[in-house]
Length: 254
Image (cartoon, rainbow, N blue to C red):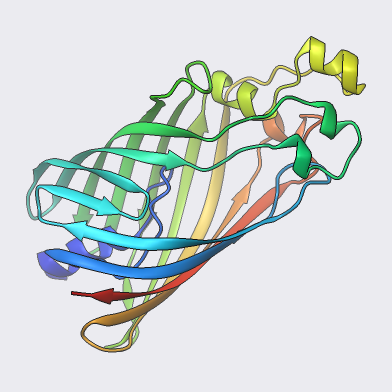
C-alpha cells in the first residue's frame, strides 16, 4: 500500500471515541456531501435515533476537518501519525423521548465535546490507532475515554473498498455516571434503583464499504456492533446487551 493510499483510508475511519463519520475524504482539499445515521438505543423504552448530517472533509496536511471532528497534525511520516482534535460526542438522554413513566422522571444527559490526542501506526498489514479523549465542556464532570482499534483496508475492485475493524473502548466512572448512573434523588422520584457505575471496557466490531462512483463522487456505508459490558448493562436505565450504529452517505470531492 502506498503512503497516499494509507492516508486516504485513515481519513475514512472514525476514531474509536470520536464522532468523525467516514466519507469521501480528499487527500489534499475539500469534499462535501450528505449522510444519515441510525443507531439502536442503549436506554430502556427509548426512541431509536435516526438523523441526517452534512459531510464535510478537509485536509491540507496541517489542519483537518473529518466529519464532526477537527484538529491538527502534530507529526506524521510514512508510518506514523500523531494528531490533536476536538470532536462532538453525540450520546445524550432526553427524558421527553422516553416511553417509560419512570425514565421520564430522570435528569437529562447532554452530549458534549471531547478533546483528544491520537496516534496511528499504519503499515501494509493494517492500521493501529490509540487515543485518549477528555470532556472539554465538563458536561460529564471529568469524563474520559481511552481506545484502541485495528483496521485493514481491502480493495475488492478499483471502485470498491471494504474496511473491517475491531477495537476496545475504556470509559471512566465519571462518563458512565453521567450517561448511565441514577442518583438518590432520581431514584426517590422515579422508583428506579440508585446506581453508581464504575469504569468499563467495551469491545466492538465494525465494517465500512466505500464505493467510488467516479474520480470525484463517492458513497459509503459503515456499521459498528458494540457489546455492552456488565457495568453498563446493570444500570436500571439500560435494557440492552449491545448497540448497532450504521451511517451512510455520498460525497463530492472538489
